[in-house]
Image (tube, rainbow over all chains, first blue to last red; front, top):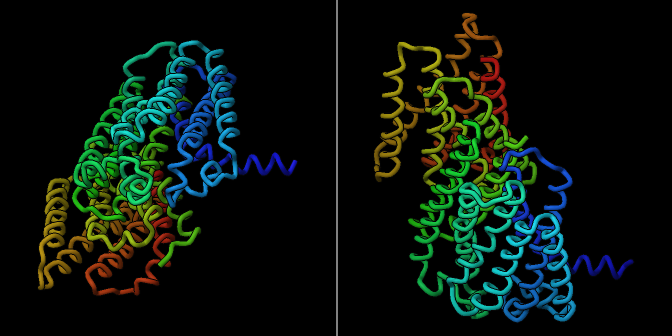
Length: 286
Length: 201
C-alpha cells in the first residue's frame, strides 16, 4: 500500500494538475456551451477520457524532456528528471494512460476520439518530440494541441464542428502565447540553460510582449464572439467584457513597462481569466 | 506587507460579489446606470483579483489613484441618473471632467497642491453623492429603507478611497500598515452594503 501511495505522489507532479485541470475545464465548458440537454454519464465519461488523454500526454512530455528538466532550476526536482522514476516506467505509464484515455474517447464517438487523438498527437509528437528543441514557433503547435479539448467537448455535444467550436478553439490557441510567453520571460535563464529556444531569447522581449498583446486581443475577440453566438445573457457578457478589459490592460501594461511584476501579474491573471471564462460558458447551461 | 490567507479570502469574496452584481444585480436598470455600475464593480473585481495575485505591492502602482476614483465616480453617476433626472447631464459632465483632471494631474509631474486638491474635490463630491442620495431618497420614502445601505457603502468607499489616495500622494492619514490591515475587510463590507442596497433600491 505504501508503495502505491508513494508512486501516486511521484506521478501527481508528472500530470501537472493545474494545467491538466484548466484544459479539462475547457473541455467541459466546450461540452456545456452547446446548451443541449446535459447527459451526466456522457459528461463524466468525457471528463475522465479527456483527463486521461491530457494527463497521459503530459507524462509523455515529462518522459521525453527529462534531460531538459534536469537542467532547469524550476523543474530539476521532477521525478522523471531527478531519476526517482525510471524513464522506462514513465514511458510505459504515460503511454498506458494516453491509450486508455483515447480509446475511451473513441468509444464515446469516433469524431470526438479523433479530436482528442489530434490534441495528443500535436502535443507529444509535433510539439515535444519534433519542434520544441528546434524552434520557438513550436508554441503554435502546443497552442493547437491546447485548443483541442474545448473543441472535442463541443463536438461531443453537437456532433459536428461549427463556428462556435472554431472560435472557442481559437480563443485557447491565442490565449496560450499569453500564458507561455510570460512564463518563458519569467524563467528565461532556465530555458537558456536547457537550450530551449523561446520567443524572448530568439526575438527579444519587445517582440515577445508585442506577440502577447496581439494574441491577447485575438483571444478576447474570439471568446467574446463565441459568447455572443452561444447566446450568453447580457449579464454574463458584461462580466466577460470586464474580465477581458482587465486582461487587455495588463497585456498593454507589460508591453509598455517591461517589469517582472507586471509580467507575473499577466501570467497569473491570464490563468484566472481563462478559468473564469470557462465557468461563464459552462454556467449558462444550467 | 505580506497578505494573509484571510485577506485573500476576503478579497476573493469581494470579487465574487462584484461579479454577481455585474451579472445579476444591475440587470433591470437603464443603459447608462448599467454601464456605470459595470465599470464600477468591474474595477472593483479586477482590483480584487490583482490584489490577490500581486499582493499589496500592487498598491504602489500610480494607477491605484485612478482606479480608486473610477469606482465612486461611476456609482455616483449611476445613482444620479436613476434618481435625480434634473442633474443627469451636469453630473455626467462633472464625472468626465473630474476623471480627466485626476488622470492629467496624476500623469503630469506637478510640485503644487493641485493634484491633492483635485483628488479631494472629485472624491468628496462623488463620495457625498453616494453617501447622501440613497439616505435622502430612503428618508423621503421614494426608495425602500434598505436602499440607504448604498449610502453606507458610499461612506466606506469614500473613507477607503481617500485613505488610499492620500497615502499615494505622500500625505497619509492612516499609516500604510494600518490601512492594509483594514483594506480587505473594508472592501468586502462596502461591496456587501452596495449589493444589499441595490437589491432593494
